[in-house]
Image (cartoon, rainbow, N blue to C red; front, side, top):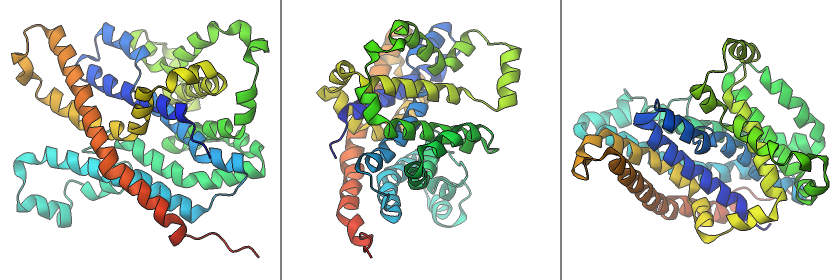
Length: 361
């Protein structure tokens, strides 16, 4: 199937927003200007967008080709897609934080003692993310990626099952399962109804008269956590969401769903997204997400070392933000071509060999 490139581009822009968000929020999160900026460059809730988009991408071809997932092959390819680059990222961060004690004791920790829980983080066990802090999102991505074939099969039997699961997900006790199952289910709905969404005549619909209000509502939902930081929603709001076990990520999931609805339906938006730079960002977006954290950590940990640049804090801020972006893009490009692409090609070459098609009776 032809790849939907504009979705790659929007994923790249979301990853880029994470880089900026982590930089500006590291030291200045309490400043009003940063809180307002975070409403529009909301890397915190970009993960919601990633999860909804993953639900779409991982299920799309099965609905459009009406084929059932080959579960062993799907799992094999997904592990090779996500895990090798994640492994490299965790080790990079581990070696950085242990850079002053690289001796036999560190080797003992890596291969025998496991005092720093490196093994758990490497295999994404139970939300261990000591060295690569954003790694919690990769645990969620991996779990639901591997769960996706079963959700697809359920949806192929009857899409109503997915709709029933959405409110049920609110009442699932484990918070991560509840919150992020909701995201992936939204992505599945987008994939299932893709032809109808693409063909929908928005200008002829009853929603068109709300075309200026909808973006405001979407922005509010997507960045609700930052509006709450600027001005607290109050005790009544807190009581209601605590009672229902809702999180800001539920709201940003709905906003992400609507954003994707718009982009899938709007050819003009697709045209803007399909320029070479945005497409390149999309190609290396996973590596951007993986590599940026260590760059931001190093820049912020050694912040006072950069005083030689200028005494003007604003200029220093702008210069180091630029440096962070450039270094991240360089490292992400290297990661993509030396790790990501290598294992993607390996999975393409070997998946059918290791997991051949089922023999028809």
